[in-house]
Length: 522
Image (cartoon, rainbow, N blue to C red):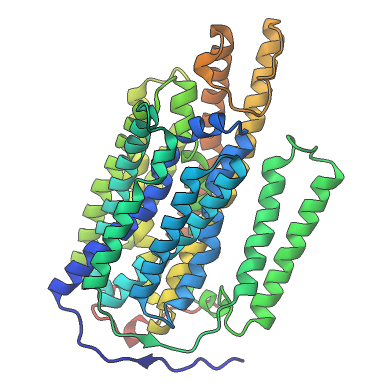
């Protein structure tokens, strides 16, 4: 069994409250960039895909590429934070994000754009993982709820402003969707400078061996299965040799990943010993299901508003205010309550219950649902998310040993992103199949001449003849409602996992305390 090396601490004076607030500004700017990278293109995606002559699978992979790269890199960034200066790592992640953004803005094909989005995902994975680790290194768990509330607020602001900014840029003549990828660059530069001036942490250093092989095998296996899910039924038949080959290959690579993680790697990318802790196990399970339910369904809301409801990208961006407004208020209030009381379980369970309710209510939407109802359902979902997302990581951090803080935080983020990748890909394939089936059935029933539109390609609905436009609006409206119905089952599974998490009062210091040692499984 590998011996865990003793952390070597480079002594430095603790940061004062004023210094923490200064560094927090830089961290929140970095987090804003990470969140903006996805939200600013949400309402541009339908236009991007039609301009680059893409398909529904292409739409899905613009999102999945970022999620997979983020998933693969998140635990690696967490490991590196145990070896190198955290400030340098955050700044490096911001630089990678900027490079990916520039390439994406210049892309002339779907392939180049998807590759650039993967580069962006590497940077975003670093930022999202490291911001949590840096805050955990500066602030005791009892006070961390307040700062988690700030992160939730930034998440909300980025989610509100991103679709609005992206929608406006797409609609303004002379700018277009390419300008969406430049928006985050000035903010990333500002975050870089602020962190350079304000963030001064002691280096808690231990010798680490980064398990690049394990990370590559995990993401390679999952990517192969996602390719199978998203392309089967379109590029090849479900029962074809290609289909069977992708399944066998994906499962074989994942089996190799398990072997490497449990038997070969000296320091696995997903350390098995972390899963002796009941809180980590249940939070990980919940994170996977939340990722599937949340990312898998909400990423297609922009298609609902633009295709099923005929909105412009700007108008579609405005429709996200209800959900994100609920998230903003909920995250701030829940963070303050947790900091005041030291208790988080009731908020976590109540938040997940609202997530289930919000997703279930959204399963009833179609192209004729009153927009006020759609906004109300989104607001319920937002309130639930605000009380859930950051607080789940907080619960796990509270149980983690200081030496495992970076790794534990990144593992939870890893599985949430993995669940999101699976959800976006699987539900995207379901959406493509359902829309194609409904369009073909409606065209056959109406005896209209069949054109090239009856495929997995996404048309510019506004340019279609009125009868064909109504068919597409109905197909997308009802099919996206069906995605939320499927997502409801995963949200319920996440709620069950959260209910069984045992509450441990939050520590008031950064050091481990005997009274709060992790509860071991079995």
